[in-house]
View 1 (cartoon, helix red, strand yellow):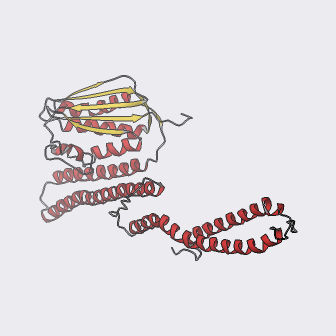
View 2 (cartoon, rainbow, N blue to C red):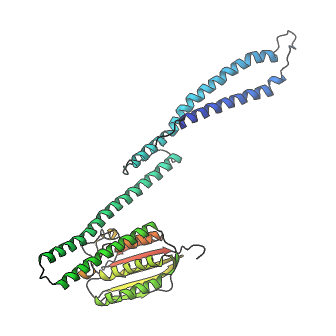
View 3 (cartoon, rainbow, N blue to C red):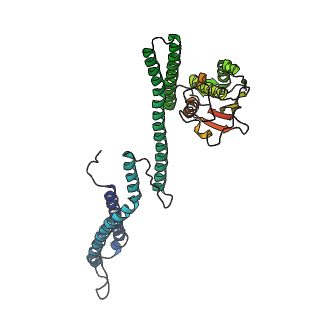
Length: 363
């Protein structure tokens, strides 16, 4: 959007400097007149008639004072112009970086050097903002590409199954229906997970009092049949853990954590421990599971959408949609909490979630 025509900030500053010098000079002349010239007699009082008087001083002083004021005005304009340009030079760099970012170049950085003044702080804050924005945009692009691929896969499978059924009318219809049902169920789960992820990213939910210990027990009760089928011992401990948030989102977070721990607990016969506790005005949840040893470089990537490590293999019955820990991270972030993943030296994973107790005054 084009700027309306008008004087630039540099010209305004130069005029301000010049005006300040002119006013200061005029005040100085007024002080000289008020405290010096008015005490000088109007007529000669000396014996020879040549002593200074007010008339002579005014005739000689004011023309020189006028020249001095004119010089101060010109000096203020010229000096103020160059001084303002030097002071506003960092702002020009920030403006250029802003325009580059507006054009889509988020990789550009100001990297201003020099003393830690206001412009340097502004440039550093702008660089930090660009870094976070670039990371967020890259993450969203990867997420969109992965989501498109994940949604395309079940649709392609459904299309292939229908083509086979059309070309082979003698094929078992019950088997076809069951496979289509499984593919459709996966598509629905993925869509619901994407919608929930979008909702948690926006943070548009009302906060209510929530006891994380009860949420953990509900999630464990739901997943107990799955744990029994896999021979996994599920242990939930901890007292009342009060926090504030969305009961639905926190239940989904807890369910994803426990299910992730159960499904990836290989070989069979492992354990999953869920512990909740109140700590420093926040609710803490720690989910620990046994399992294969995870490479250190794999752990930080587990919360990325659709990220599946080579060592984290699921069976066909629980293929998942690749959004389990990504949803957990999004929900924790929407609640202002922290998420920490640590690989156990003996194998498995320890996930620690801290949710602050933030409730509105009316809760």
